[in-house]
Image (tube, rainbow, N blue to C red; front, side, top):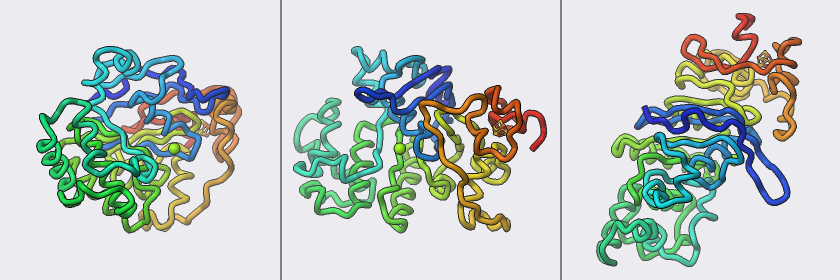
Length: 318
Ligand code: SF4
Ligand code: MG
């Protein structure tokens, strides 16, 4: 197993100038090597914060973030930064914003090769960039082109090729296909799955879209207001969701598994993550809430193979 986070994150707050934006609290999980853990939840649940903390884009204000038993923030501030960054890369949502429009593909994909000293000279760089482009279904001839000469899906393939340049073990993918048309999304997801099989990659896949998660995940973690409320094997989570919030999200997907479940829109609004409700922070939206729920925060317990934080599950009420 590939210990991505160990006993980390007591209280982590994403800091922007003059305001605290997102809080992540007590989230911990492991990802099996060569598999995908998808983190899902509505916007503001802290899933992107987890992604950015893992690759060192945010520093935790408290607690720690560990990758394979290495403290990320400390390591990235010291001489071990370059080797650690080589092992984990990030793919962002918006391929338009993440590619420099004035650079040729050769320079975009080749930058990490140069930075990490992985090629001897320009000819070797061009050769390696060509191979990386082929691995994502593009042509070696594309090295001479600029980002504007590609479609959205092709640009995301370029981002993936760049992320793969250092031969990382671990890729953090934050909504990598949500800016793309539905038909293109499937192509990009299939390329990612194919690369995972061939290279043994481990993915943390952030998404608000359960249909996408169903396509890519091995394990699914559901986040609500900065906390992990349920985590299970994908099959188990979709077939037998335990947490009322997970059930609400699944009920909102149209035709998810033809069981006759009716489509019910997600009820209620996500409260302000900086001032979450007391007790179980889902209690104002939960059809199973009782007095205990508004006072006592439920612990994340393992129940029949699912990690779930809910008093009603623990009490056997649901
Ligand atoms: Fe609902 Fe209570 Fe479970 Fe929270 S702990 S999800 S409020 S039943
Ligand atoms: Mg986000």
